[in-house]
Each structure stands twice: as structure tokens, then as C-alpha cells.
Length: 85
Image (cartoon, rainbow, N blue to C red; front, side, top):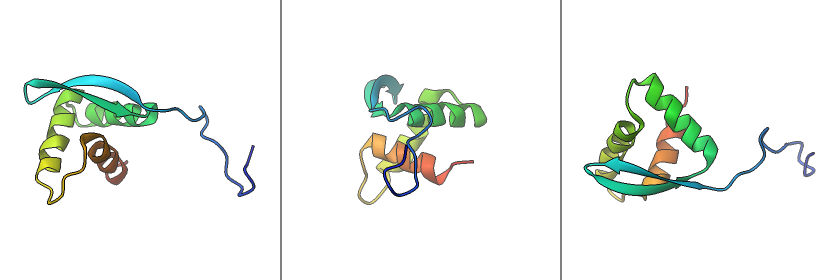
């Protein structure tokens, strides 16, 4: 069903964030992402032949170098959007 603009909801519907714990740089951190972002992150890790925690750690290391670093979840979403296949 559309809301008048000719667009539809995602095939699986809308879902809120899911919190997961990941170990990066030797410590555990919790990250909340919507399931579609977790799926994309897992696919990117497979594509790059990296464990999920290693990919997140690399993105985190790049994020920290930014002039005004965003939170980790925002950095992951941004990285995924800019690196989509």
C-alpha cells in the first residue's frame, strides 16, 4: 500500500534497531542497527573475507580519524551506504 506518493514499504516491513555486542580493539561494545544494516554489514564482511568484528574495527578506526567523528552506528550506516555493491 502506498501513502499517496507511489512508494511502498520494504518487502519485510519496517523494523527498529537490534542491539548486538561486538569485540573491537580488545573490548566489547554494543551497536544498535536495523536488521537490514546488519545483513548488509555481514555481506560486506563476507565479500571482503573479514570476520564481522574485524570489519567493524576497521570502520571504527577510520571513523576515529574524522574531524568530527560520528557515533559508531552512524559510521557503519554511512560506510555501508557509500560502499554498497
